[in-house]
Image 1 (spheres, chains in turn green, cyan):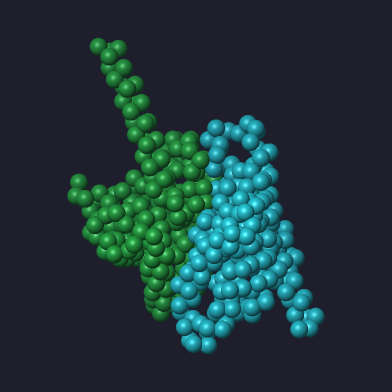
Image 2 (image 1 turned 90 degrees about the vertical axis):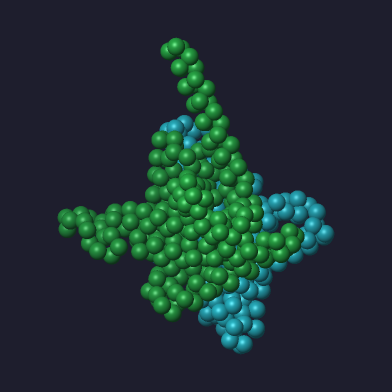
Length: 247
Length: 196
C-alpha cells in the first residue's frame, strides 16, 4: 500500500481517534447533538490537525526539545484562531452552534497526541496525510454519533425529518445524559465483540488516556500495539497447535 | 457595589457550580473526570488543584483581557494568549509550591501537569469573556465552575469505590459502567435546573 494511503487508512480505520483510541472525548460528547454539528466540528478539527502536523513536521528540526510543548501550543492555537475567524466569516451558523468548543480544539488530545507522537518524528508528506487521516476518522465518528443521537432524540437526520410521524422523539438522547449513555453503550458493545479499543486493552489507560492528554499519545499507542501483537501471537500459536493436531 | 451585585454573584456561583455543571452538562474536563476518579483521595487532590488553578486562571485571564486585549482591539488573540497564560501559570504554581510548601506539592504536584490540557480551564476563561463578566464576577464564575468539577469528580469517585466489588455484566466492566454512572449523575443534576 502506498504510504500516504496507508496513513489515511490508519487514521480512519485502524487507529480511529474516537472509536479505537478514545481520545478527544469533550468535543465528542458535547457537539454530537446533531449530525451537522458533528460534521462541522470534525472538519474544523481536520483542518487544524492537518495544518498543525504539516507545520510541526516542517519545524521539527528547529524546535528545541525543551520548549517543544509551548511551541506546539502556539502553533495549534494560531491555527485554531484562523479556523474560528474563517467560520465566523463564512459559516456563522456552525460557529454559533459550536460556540466555545471551536476555540477548545486547542486542548483536544488528538491534536497534541498526533503532533507529539507522529509529526515531530516524521517527514512532512506523511505527517500531513496522517493529519488528514486522523481528522477524517474523527469526522466520520462524530457524524455517526451525531446522526444516531439526532435520529433517536429528534427524529431528524441532517435537519430533515426522516422518522414516521408516529415516532415520539426520545429527547434525552440530544441532552447531556444521552451523550454519556450513547458512549457507554458504544464502549460496552466494543467490549462485547472484543473490538480493538483503548478501553478494553486491559491497561489503565482507558478513556482519554487517564486524563493525561499531553503524555498519553505515544504511551497509549504503544500499549495498544503491544496488546494487539500479543493477541495475534497467541492466536497464531493456537492455530499452529490446531494444524499440528489435525496433521 | 450594592446588594444587587452580590446577589448576582451568588447566582453566578450557583449556576456555574450546579445548574450548568462543567462536567455533567458542558462536557469540559471529561478526560480527568473519567481518568482519575477511581479513588476518593486522588479525586479530592485533583479537585483541590483544579479549584486553585481555575480560580487563579480566571482572575489573570480576565484581567489581561480587560486591561490589554480589549482596549487594544486584540481580542481575536484571546485563544492564544489564554492558553499560554494557563500553561505558564500551571508551571509557575508548580514551581512556587515546590519551593515553599513541599507537603502541598506532594499532595497536588502530580495533578498539576494534567491541568494544562484540561479543557475546563481554558473553557472557563473563554466563557468569562463570552458572557462579558467583569473581573470579580469572572473569579466567582471560575471558582463556582471548579467547585462543580470537584463535587462531580468526588461523587463519581465515591460511587466507583463502592462499585469496585459489585458484580457487573462482563461487557459493562471498566469504562461503560463509569459512563452509565455519569449518565445517571447528569440526570440527577437536572434537578438543579429550576434553582436559578
